[in-house]
Image (cartoon, helix red, strand yellow):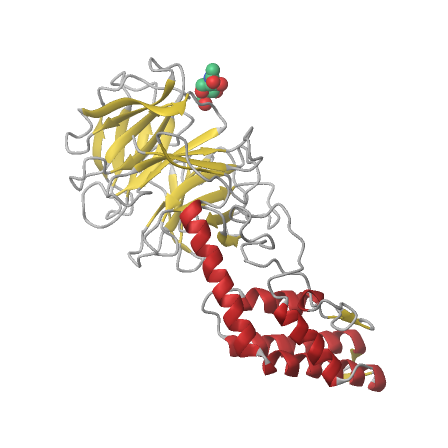
Length: 447
Ligand SMILES: *[C@@H]1O[C@H](CO)[C@@H](O)[C@H](O)[C@H]1NC(C)=O
């Protein structure tokens, strides 16, 4: 049995080595400045032994009790900006005691019976760890917070991996999201209300949770860190679903719109909305619409067309249209998507798979404009942006231009959002696979 003091000394040694000693990996190190970073933390978690240069003094397990998870969680807590240190330590101490109970106690009918000797010494160890951590909490917590603060600032300033974006790009970066395929859908919205657009990756199927999942990467951290990863009450989804984000219930948080295009109960295109406030755990609208069931010739987006503060649903009909042009059909949010407030042809010919659509106020007149992104087979041999103005009811192009982005294909997904906070929407090209970084990449252009 180690004395209280030898363990405290071990932990103190660890505190001095707070910024040394843990192995580096493939995680974002911000140009090597934070070699021990991992999992979004300036120092990756490494059980209890990461506290000490002498792992035999501060071990992950004692007998059958395993403290590793509790130690990892404690580290994570200290490295979470503005975490409450008392709460970190209370959870830590409770967690250690629980680990002892789990290892040495069992329930017999209604009574809990513990092995007196082993449980007793385990608790002693737990109390020793606990006291030692509390003894030095001020200093260690402050150091961890400072390091994390500098880490996050470094990433925000430098983009983590890519040092400099190529000419014509506002950002080009890999992310902690692996390469992705057709089971992923992407959207842009400010999830954490910090004024920066975040990236929503909706995983539709083959998920761990057996539901449609939402994974959000923080814009403020140049998409280097997940700020939400969750299953939802929406079952796994397929090609008949289209996703978008918008603030449906006016609470300032982006909600998730799942548009079910076909095989619906109502025999119409349906709108299902999961609330952001519930972390996408609660439906706040599920409804059929006057729009018949739809197929691949339709593309969907969300934006406030009639400026009543409620998101409206844009259905873009790309081909097989009456007008022989790409058409815009808008269902009003105020009517719970029961009424069309615009149905019109446009000067854009019928479009196919090489076109991707999004909504954003390009000319800053308060009306949403329609972005038609032509991915390939373009005159300019680059990915092109063709923007139809909302003010003209989509009858007039306000921009038709090539971009710095080469021609693109199915491995790219497009969205718009104001990345550089100049008030104009930028174009996000999300490269899902065949990437240099072997991760899903974000490339931002200001067309
Ligand atoms: C053009 O884009 C379409 C749709 O993404 C894709 O299926 C096709 O392979 C692309 N063609 C080329 C030459 O990249």
